Image (cartoon, rainbow, N blue to C red):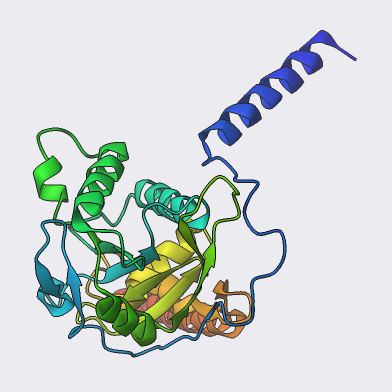
Length: 288
C-alpha cells in the first residue's frame, strides 16, 4: 500500500472521529427492550392547540393561542427537563436541525416550544434550560439573546395542563421508578417526536426520533406554513414532489408527481420551440 493511501485513510478516520464526537452522547441506560404498547403517539392531525394553557418561563399562565401570529408555524417538543435519556437527545437533535436549516430562520420564519410533561418541574428550571440551549445556538450572542427568548420557549404546567396537551397531540407515556438503584426520582417511558403545527396552532405533522433530516425538517415547516414561509420556486416544487410517508415516517419523493411536472415542463418547452420556429419562418417569408 502506498504511503499516500495510508495518509488518506488516517485523515478519513480522523474526520469520522470528529463527526461522532460532535454528536450527542449515547446513553446506555436507554431501554433495551421495546416500550410498552401504552407508550405511543396517536396522531391527531388537525387538532387545535390554541386554547390550551401552559406556564411560561416567568411562572405566568399563557394560552398557546397567544403565541400564534397566523404567519409562522410552531414546533412543539414534549420532553421533561431532568430526563436522563431521550429528552436530552431530542433537544440536542432539534438544536442541530435549527443550525442545519439555513434557509428558514428560527424566530423569523418559525417558533419552537419545548414543554415539560413532568408536573413537578417548575418555571425556574425551564428558564435555566432555555438559556442553556439558546447559548448553544451559533446565531445567538449576548446582544441578541433577549430576542431569542421569545423564539424558543420552554414551558411547564400543572397536571391538568399537561394532561390536556398530551391528549390533544396523542402523546402517551408512563411513569416508572428510576432504573438506577441510587436514584428514587420518578422517570417516564415516552416516545420521542416533534409536533409541527400551522400558524394558527392546528397539528400538521409529526417528526419522529431524535435526529431530523434536513429535508424532513424543511418540508414539515413548508407544509405547516401553508406556503407562507416558502421563499423560492424550488421549495414550492420540492413540496409538490415530496409527500409524507406514514409507514417510513419521513418525506419521500413521489414518482408520479415528478413525472407529471416533467411532462408539463416538456410540453412548455415543445410549445416554446414551435413558437420560435414559427416566428423564424414568418420572418423568412416577410424578407422574401
